[in-house]
Length: 208
Image 1 (cartoon, one colour):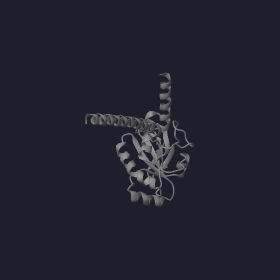
Image 2: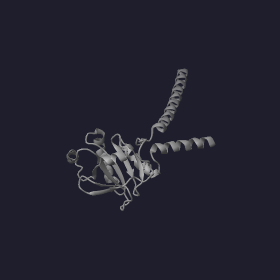
Image 3: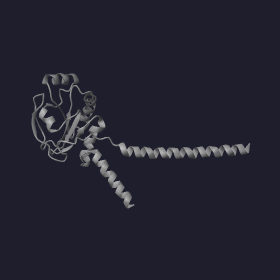
């Protein structure tokens, strides 16, 4: 009987140690995967305006009839998130609640401007349906071409001094927030930041 208990305890401890080894391997693998895929950043456009440079100045008019200057130094010290969308873009529609929340939470430093092109009456009707009449909304084919907007939804962040901080295809909240993070870290994109961090880590490991 005693021998049976001893053998069972030995087997149990072997299983426990094996389980600990498996958990450790899984944790290590999760860390590797996280390093490869995180964080999600806006998909940078390879062509068009360069981040870190002055954005072109546009004297525009919103659908509400208000004069609006995009670019240049803002007297209120706010940055501008230019969000390109379309009434026929389903992903754009899913991001509207996200933008609404950001419009409130980031109001102290950010103004969100919606932009598109096409038939004015169609856009007015869509704005009414989505209850976006109070949002600055600009119809300008030239603006989209200047920003090299090829796919939607597309975001461009211009700071209070008129500098284009970040831009790219934004399909999620994380993509939009990555534009803010890029501005805060002074990089063109989160991908650029992560690449620089990885190189720094590798150099530190080589030194060690």
